[in-house]
Length: 248
Ligand code: FPP
Image 1 (cartoon, rainbow, N blue to C red):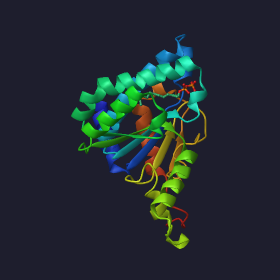
Image 2 (cartoon, rainbow, N blue to C red):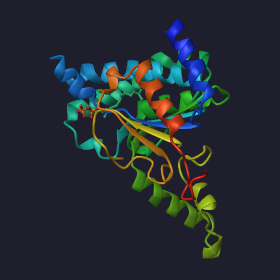
Image 3 (tube, rainbow, N blue to C red):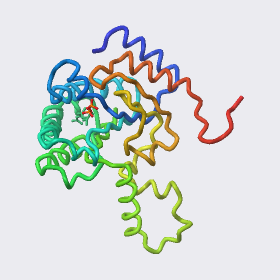
Image 4 (spheres, helix red, strand yellow):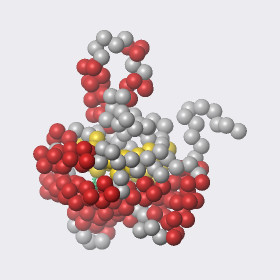
């Protein structure tokens, strides 16, 4: 919704610092559903709706990259019917939302080990990545079967195969980052986690080294424009020093 209120908030926020790369751990779908005496699946469906809204809001705010945690390498441990429901939900969402994503000029990329995902889902991922390649308003990275430690190990392996004879001192942080799944986007500036827990849960471990962290107890389906504005105005007030001395 593009209300007058929201338009004013955008203008206000744009006077401050807007993160270039925002990462979100969308937690609390299950508890949101439970509180409403609905099945967990209803929470995940509401979570998808919220992701659609938030991606649009990020585009309106001028955020260039949004990376969201949709399914971790640990999430396979959930009951099988929830796992297969989530896989189906990712499939239907990619199928149904393709047109809208392209209309909003959203480039979709999936990060994580996709080889373990259902074949149909892999096809849909490839299709949306290919079709949205030219989109330049928002880059939406969806972390699916993603684990931060796995990503770092994959990077080590790829680097090893790519450059066996590189002297060890040639492996700078910059060089190493080129082997991560996120090789073509800047590090995370701001990370938001909904749902009340205060941890990273194996999400973007390398990329969040200097990110500002923001935790809210709001469940993901309840996260709204006010919450996003509140988080972003806090980001704007934070002094990022990257390990250096505070400027006076
Ligand atoms: C965490 O809530 C959420 C998930 C594991 C799934 C997140 C997925 C979506 C929001 C859908 C994204 C859709 C696409 C197409 C990318 P939880 O189940 O851990 O909630 P709980 O902590 O309350 O149990």
